[in-house]
Length: 118
Image (cartoon, rainbow, N blue to C red):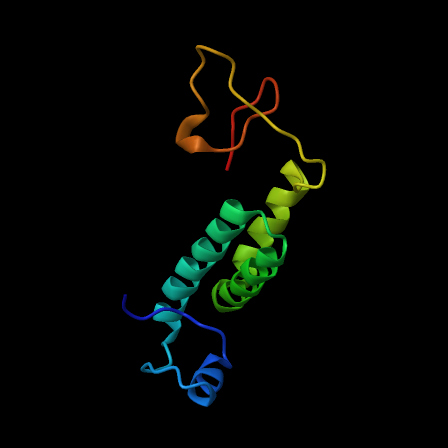
């Protein structure tokens, strides 16, 4: 199975409950990769069982991943994207018309008359 990211207090819980295992702390670059895997794992669990409680596991992994990854330039780029394209509050859905290819690179749908952007 190999190493996987677990919650901060798991070691103490496991030791108190007789669960064996090895423990170590990941460096920043490894932590980013491990948190990405954890994010995907938790999102898949939500998709499989539909339990909204899983979303808080997604949130926790995503929050730590953002803390490790965010820069002022990345934040500014995100704010510009949100200002232009919005968020996901309105739950808008899109599908290409039959016979038309999806936007290049699988990016978001373009507004009528505009090219798609990521």
